[in-house]
Length: 95
Image 1 (cartoon, rainbow, N blue to C red):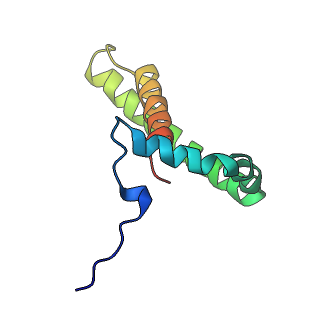
Image 2: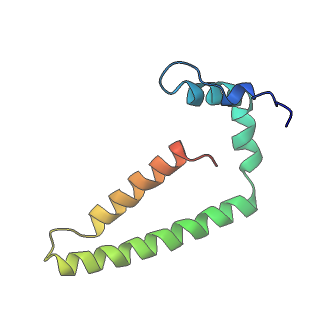
Image 3: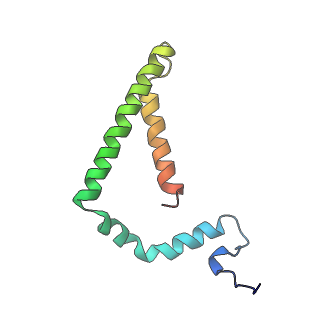
């Protein structure tokens, strides 16, 4: 089988998180257009739908937790957890 050249993006950098930093440096020129191209009625309606679906299920689960733990864990904690998880997903996902 013929040897194929390994793309530069898959090569190691020699330091911690070097590949992530290289990836972000490559994306930097497109940063503004990523946000301006995404603003449309379709994306805003999809985001609103996802927000409502997530909040309602989180509130319901928080209410169940509040009842089951005699008030030690409740809706506020579940909303905070969902927010932190959303931020972590947006920062570290490859989407």
